[in-house]
Image: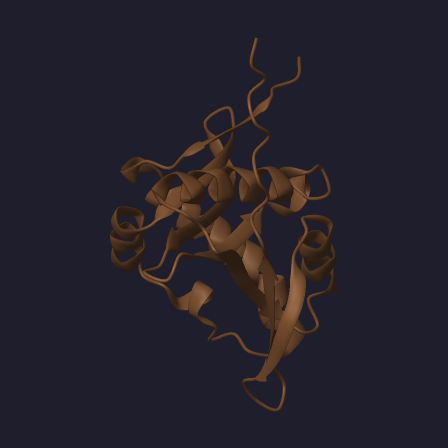
Length: 167
């Protein structure tokens, strides 16, 4: 018997599962860059709980298990800032990352007019870069953070929703 993955807004009770998933999901990134002190691996539960109150957070659920998450907010300039997209390693390459991004983008668009969606990832994170390109994100710049890490900044312009047909 198979189960469907459901995308929904996170609730406060999801905080511990989100933090565990984040820790699991960012270990390969830490290894890739040789930096185990990256913020996703050192974030406290209390800090994550604060973020749940200040941002939109979506989760992908397989039954009771959180197997994916993403968070973001619309800033004062109308830019949708997207952060911390994580999908459980066993659930990757099944379209969950794209579904989570779509859900967050739709929710941010409800907050007001969106000029652009922006996010960043590490320069060696080729899987992430491929996913973002498939989702319509284009590179806007590269920021050297250290001798081992550069952030690739990406942006996507919102697409106009089709007009409803009139009878």
